[in-house]
Length: 159
Image (cartoon, rainbow, N blue to C red; front, side, top):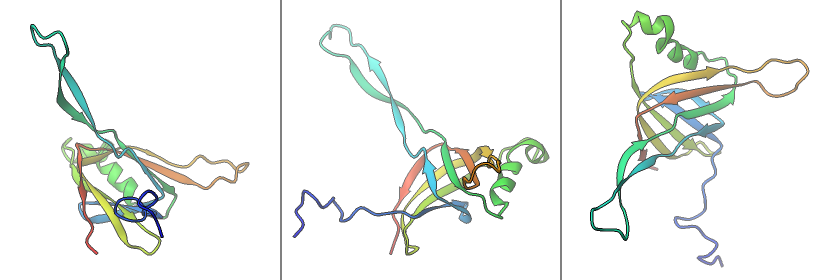
């Protein structure tokens, strides 16, 4: 019998085998690693006149780091095409207007079940990196995508 000390709240910890990235509801790719899912709140300190025992701390601006996605190289050009539309000639061709989208990252288990998702506001790509090539190494070929956003919200997955 499992004790409450060994069973986490909500049951067993889920195990993810891949992470799905969607852009405006369209699947752009599956990744093995996603980093940068966090938010920080800047603290503003207010020193009150006559109150020398402490300084008030109140929440200030929120900030979110960029998300970084990593995966093995695939034969799909979807990520690179999206990146091209957001920079260079693609950006200039859109009258220098950036088209921001809603992105989503969904945790997927070994059976293909969607476990949890996060939606990201106003996403756009800021960096893509292809694999390093060397015949002397047997490392898998990987690509990396970095995106900026203006915040996120958790999305409960329905079974």
